[in-house]
Length: 320
Length: 107
Image (cartoon, rainbow over all chains, first blue to last red; front, side):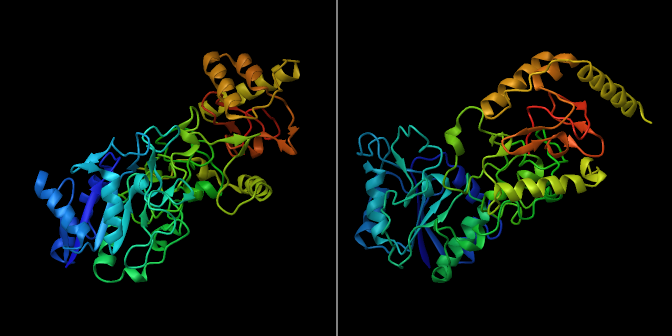
């Protein structure tokens, strides 16, 4: 059995909702098939009040082993570094996080808020929010850049707004079944198995991307969302078009631009007016290029691809 | 030829005639920033179906404009439909020739 504790800081519960929707494996499978003992979870935990405090103290003292510490939401430090805006079980949540992270074999941050601060940490960041080991791109966060759990790993970051349910449960299973040491993490401590390919990988609009045919309105089945509607699929690391949402679809498949929510800068441009769902350009050229592409190459490729585009690329090919 | 295609040809010729006839359009400043683009598009939306106003506001020309080291021609613009010879920017939505240009060009 692996003891798992899930706590929630500055959060909307979106990652909890996502977790409860998991299918492969499901939240129930974790318990019945993979030996995960959910000690407490904000939506599932039975203990309240003093009983919960007793459980948390037993974990921080080492009386009960904490194998997997999952945190959702930001670490709230306001006001003035005290963390009093987010009290839990008789003290600031940030104090519980600090104590529990010291005794956890594995610490897992779920969702953008826990990984890099997400929307609560958007300027001016009134809640003084931090991610567990990052604040946006800056390494450090609440636990500091040198933090390692007892198993010797830094915080395992599973970003997303929310994270895909199966990313969560598959990583929990890997850790619970003793394969945590096999996880390889990227520079932002995301499991490479999920966050090496791009959101664009597997997108049904790739042909339109290749032939430079743009979608100009939401929900259009024709056209690529990158050129005009601010889609960040070509520069966002996620498997959203490989491990589909609800096993059915993805944002881009449904005509909704990728917001880049698995990257540390999310929400991009601090949500300034006119920056959401609009490709930012400088003199007509996108400010953010597809990963690894430079401006000169992009311009040349675009001109050639557009000239070569077939007639069907301008039509709706997903006929009902 | 379909009715839509016939209409496209008629509008295309009308645009060519207006520009060749000396219609003065706002070729500069080009839409360098997102704010400028938004302002121009808002003006276009307000112009509705007034073709002359749309051409003027968007800075139409019958030849490409060289700007910022790039040739800004309809044929390389993201809104251009190569086979239909049409600008798909919703606020413009007019037939165009590949060598025409406007200041909302984006690649």
